[in-house]
Image (tube, rainbow, N blue to C red; front, side):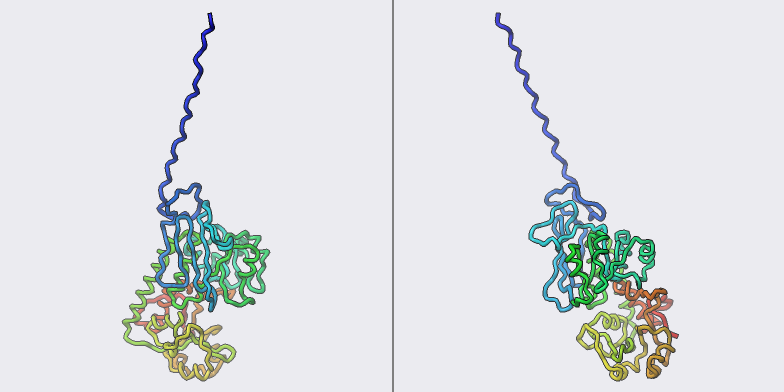
Length: 394
């Protein structure tokens, strides 16, 4: 009898792996972490920068990266600079040089100008600051303390730039500026060393609010668009409120500005941000109709003839009191503002090291500057005003 053959064992069909459930689209930008998976067609930057006051830069959003363009990165530049800010955990788009590609959000940054510190501080990003150019004249006490504790290092700038020190910090980003002068610019050497560098052209903006809006430029590298939008809106709203108060003052007192330097009196061009602040404060200025955005180099005699009768006098470098003013030149005693004690300097917030907050935070806080100026020229319109940057010289 033939043996009975057992039925062959049939292997069970393998169980198909479960179809992964796509992660929901984010409702906020990722400010601390990288993506671990990417879903095509999902916008990973739901919070976007909206620009209303500056034309100095623009940003174009894609699902996983932003294309940032600085239109005039240095004085007189005809070519824009483009940077690609790629959400970490995703691939960079093709068609760009490695130096243009920056992974965001940035965790380690070097700030090569004190004017960037207020933005980093206000947005809660000082813990990511690992380096500065020079902390000698820094006013921000938080930064001073971090430098003292060794948590922030100085790398120098221009002729004193220490490229090796910059490399040791392992920064993911260095924010600096370009003057167009090889003696002062740091970015060529930093780029040559393979570091990620961007040029911030806030200082070339010709309007007070335009300069302040460059705070959003810094925020882009940390995916902090939402916080920056709230921050700037508060500044712009306050500026508009104070400007409206000045517009209803009913008079436009004349302002004198600055003092001579090595025989030349440099006054703001009529199209400069400083001249706009004066206009918005409800004051008049002898060169308000000038179309220059740069400083106007004038002789003492010319500046004297146009400003001697000014009701108020502001922004006098290195002048601590009225006695020091006339010690520079006895002719200053002939100015109406001097005779009336209406001389104001912007050094109220200064420290023992010589750091001045006016040249640090005022760039992005024009609302505070304007409020001080209106209180100077129209004191009856700002009763009880507590001065922030300005003090009256005695």
